[in-house]
Amino acid sequence: MDRENKSGGEGQAQRRIDLLKKIGLFVLDMDGTFYLGDHVIEGALEFVRYVEEKGRRILFFTNNSSRSPKVYMERLAGMGCPIGRNQIMTSGDVTIAYLNDVYPGKKIYLVGTPALEESFREEGIPLWEKGDPRPEIVVVGFDTTLTYEKLDRACAFIREGSTFLATHLDINCPTEGGFMPDCGAFCAAITLSTGVEPKYLGKPFGETVDMVLLRTGEAREKVAFVGDRLYTDVATGVNHGANGFLVLTGETQLSDVEKSDVKPDAVYRSLGEMKELLETVWEG
Image (cartoon, rainbow, N blue to C red; front, side):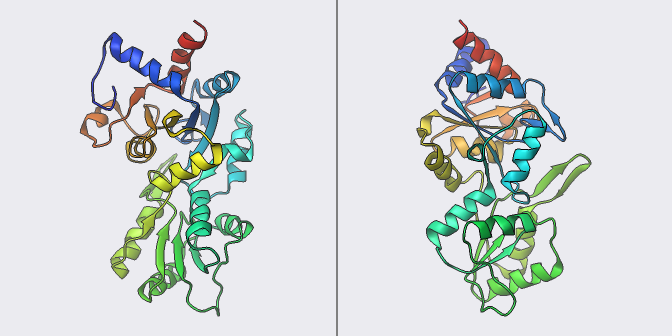
């Protein structure tokens, strides 16, 4: 199935192969795409290794801003997929880059985990502390250490005029037992209290695509955002001039595609199937 919602046939199969052939950089979602819980999805590791063997590149991207890139690097290494810092990006990274570009030196009130706070400080973002004047900006992330005091203070600053930003819009974060409230849910509460909507960063917004292109130097049309969610992973590519590939190993089912406004350029059963199709090209 492609962006025009066509299905089946030799022509469609060839289109899926042709799309893969042109990609120089695969931007992979993680949970539901490369792994589920603590287990690598069948064929995913082989896909990464094969793509890199053929001189193409892999970049992992997650909207989850509660953990540092180092934690994800350690997790992937434990799954047999060691990567460098230049191969992992989070919505926290996008937010930091955006702040340094648009609001350099501005004081930030951050609703985030200690790991996100550390990442901000390492990149020179000045964080608000008790006793400081009102911060110019409030940034909300996926804060698993959220307290009522943090929520109340964020609302107060926003009512008083602080700019409201958020690392990403995900409402829920998948867990092995179901879901837990994510950044978008926190922001919804703040918006109901203050009447102010945040500017969201991360997937599926243009700032994410811009950062990927800047960091990698890859041409926009040769980048594919690959993931199991239409409204974040796939939308990032199709809405911003890159490519959006859906894999059916996580949240989205094939039946969901027809009901969605976001139409992927192509749908694959898994990263493993993508490897099999690439082998027909590169191995003859």
